[in-house]
Image 1 (cartoon, rainbow, N blue to C red):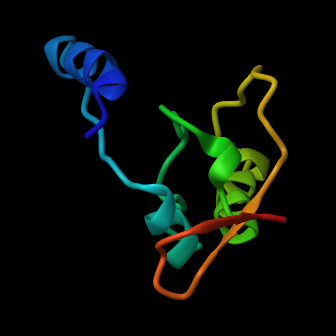
Image 2 (tube, rainbow, N blue to C red):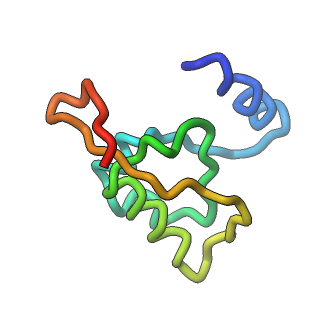
Length: 90
């Protein structure tokens, strides 16, 4: 785990929040992954999301039970090679 993720994860745990974790790869591979959730907090570089990953996040954003964000989210996407070893801007 990159060092810049540790402070927020530590704070969430220390504050008693019940959280689940997933990666961009999880969101890419499982479009219904967020269907039971109201909030997605992205800690990191969402500018490297694939179109499928962004669609999964946007599906949650459009749902009536979702907590809406007020961020200026990036709207760029990438594509992965089949073996998930490189990124190519779309």
